[in-house]
Structures are given as C-alpha cells and as structure tokens.
Image (cartoon, rainbow, N blue to C red; front, top):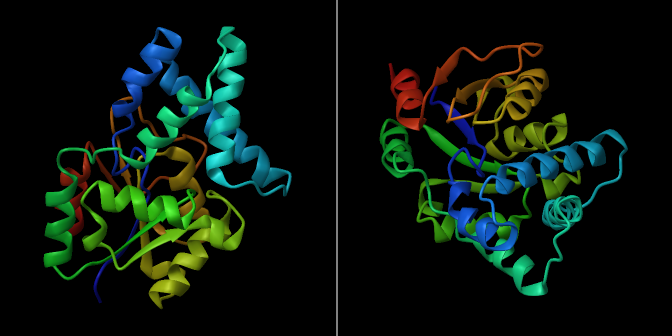
Length: 220
C-alpha cells in the first residue's frame, strides 16, 4: 500500500520569509510578518468556531488591517496588493522539491491541502515549480470549512479514494497536525524554526527538522 501523503502549503512547503521585505517597507519591521500570520490563523479559527465561513484570502487581508490598526499604520491598496502578489509567488523551502521527488519516485501518492482557494493553491504550487508533483491541489474552500475542522481532511481522503486512516498529513503547524490526528489521519510534523507541537494535542509519530528529515523517516 503506497503512502497517501497530504501536504499543507504555506510555511510547510513554501517560505513566508519571502514576504519580509514588504513588511519591512510597510511597517519598518520584518517581524510584523509573523504577527500578521498569527492573527490570520486566529481569525480563521474564529470563523470555524462560529460557523461563519469566509474565504481564506479575505481573512488574510482583514488580519493585515487589524495589525496595521494596532501599529497605527495606514495601508495603501498597493501595500495590500504587494502582500497578495507575494503570497502567490512564495518560493519553496530549499529541500522541498528534491524531497517530494524522492517520495513520488518511491511510489507515494501526493496531494496538497490548503485553506487558500483552489485558484490560489494552483497559482502558488505552479509558481513554486511544484505542481507537477501532486495528484491534486485541494482547497478547504470546496467544503466551506477551514482546517483544522475535520471536513477538509475527510474531503482529501475521499478525493484520493482512501479511508481517512490511510492518509498522512505533513505540516509545519501544530493546529493542522492536531486537526488531522483528531479527524483520523496520521501525521508528520516539520519542526521548522520557531514551530513547536501543542502539548495538549496528540503527537504525530514522525517529526523532522525539515521535509528531507521527514522523508527519510517516511521511506525508512
């Protein structure tokens, strides 16, 4: 039975640090990028808990407005466009392409699963030079529930034609790992710099510093 691997996209495969020059220009501090993404995820979680679906990109721009308001910064349309364009042109982390090729060559089946819309997912993976490695670029938008709600993980398993217990989510976010494990998936955590697991959530049985390390364990 081949590994059925479902990959998160932002931060897991693609490097958000490419946005830092925009945040330096707009806010005078590259560190605001991490604050923005944290607010982005918090706002997304609120939509899940309150059953008020909003497309992920709209949440991201609203989170940017919130961070700007806290900082006393007035955003221009060009500022917002720069962040939006940056998001669809993120580069992959250096080891990602080679690791995905190793997995594919070993017979693993790969899909991407992101909270972004399908259109954004296709653009991100294509612009990063990774789209050819995935059977599907799946979006939580198709079930109108964002990860870590269980519906996107179940949708991914259905699309791959397998039981959810036969899938494994690969992600760099504790909340995504927790959502996948509680939905019935297996999981693998990429402990990128600053990323740690939630001690209150179940732990995955594969943990590596980057996708190369996780791939070594998957293929062992």
